[in-house]
Every structure is written in C-alpha cells, then in structure tokens.
Length: 182
Image (cartoon, rainbow, N blue to C red; front, top):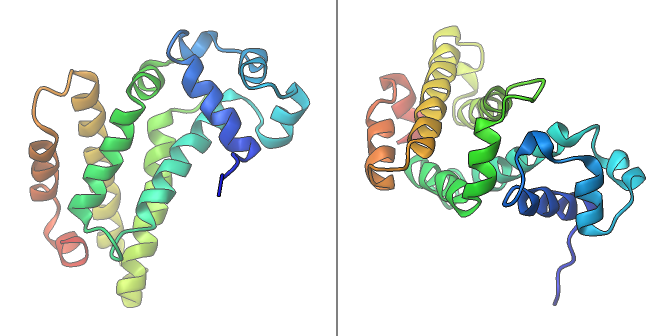
C-alpha cells in the first residue's frame, strides 16, 4: 500500500530539498510552498515560520528514534541511528547547524526535546528518581555535551569513524546514567 505524506511531512521534504541549493536564511515560505505545490495558507496552518518547520523536522527524527529505546535499540544503537539520520540528510543538517539567523538555537531545541524524552524514559524505569536533582543534572549535562560533540564531529568532516565517536560518548556517560542506559 502506498503511504501518502502528511502536509507537515511534505513541507519538511520541501525545505530539506531546498537546502541542497540554498542557504537556510535565504529560503522563504514561498520557496517552500512553491517547491511542494501547497499554498502559504496551508504552510501557516501547520507552522508559524520556517524555524518552526525545521524544529519539527528535528523533533520528528528524535521521536522516531527515541521511541525505540529499550524496545528495539540500546542507548548505543540509538545514538548511532540518530547520527545516521543526520548523515542521511547531511546537507540539510549541516546548513541548519551553521545557520545563525534562527531566533532560537536549533541545538537548544534539539537538546531540550531530547532531554524530555530521556527523562521520561529513565523515570519510567525508576519512578522514584523523577525528582532526583543530581540525576536530572547529569541527564542535562550529558545530553548537552554529547549533542555539542556530535555537531562538532559532524561539521568538522567526520574524520573519526561513527562507531568510535559513539563509543567515546557512551564511555563518557556519568556513572549514575549508565545504570539506566547501558
């Protein structure tokens, strides 16, 4: 059976395609809508602006992968899969990470969403830890540093093999988090 794209998915595909030939800050709503054959009204019924669309792309990729954590994927496999998604859409993610025109940093949006997903996962494993300030601090610190190092590796040409970078990030995980993620 053929699966049709939702309007949001169609708009996401459009901006990712446009990123192959344009810088993010130069892409307009008209470019996005013309490229996929929808009206600007349709765009604004789904997103407030192109930055909202870009964050939706991040969130969609994160949600698809985090949903498999503990069921189909280990933490190490999840990290590999997230980076592989970035590599699959390399031009788009490279341009997004280098874009300075966004009103909110994409990195912050990505980390904050991941933070909510990871906290939820850990707190499902250990509900008594939901209010543990130290554990919550470690989750935040780890996600911020792992995300920053991933983007740095990604933008600097990926000279170290993916599996090695992921192993380094897993090995750098705070001890208390290892209990829930390894």
